[in-house]
Image (tube, rainbow, N blue to C red):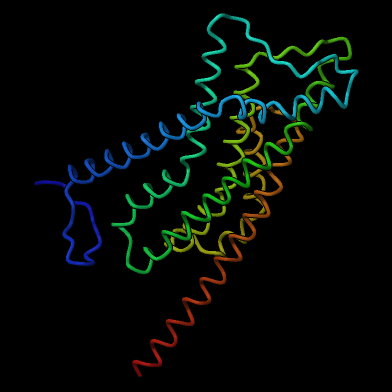
Length: 267
């Protein structure tokens, strides 16, 4: 007997088999990978401008703190490191640029299993996810010079700062990706409340545990490991978590009001 997965019956659609789901998943993955490849190609075209932008925080630190013994330059310690760094920047940039398409493909894959009421949230969720991801990445870049200043200070006054291209770019890209992913927390929390997996009352009751988990996650996913970056990620995530719970209460009240109105109409 073939396995069957639930799919919305809207427009006369029939339940999909496992192979149909796998085929659709493959199509969504291929489209996401193509969007990353196109984004990477765009980054390669504007590589010099992108590299100049990414190294700006490091140059600012070197200019404002002559005692750090750095000139804002990056160094390649091998003949292929320059090429490898270029491809790495293109790869990270392609992922960031294609985030809207990836999120849309994800929602398109899971939407058939949703009810018609749940489907209407697909576009708002995709748009809000993209905005929060970009805002998180921007916050990571804005705090990068402060994180670098902290790390350089703790390396000691007699240490000359000489950074490899690959290591510096990896740090910047991973910081932006980590902050962007962390800022998706409220979207996940709101979604879990809308589908009934958790209730706002449960989330409010466990807020102390939630805040502790947020700080632990921030400490784990922050690549630099410095307290400035960790706090810069944990504090906004905590605020966004609280806002997500408030949105859950509003949605719950609206749902209850609509249910009461339907009962009144039936009477």
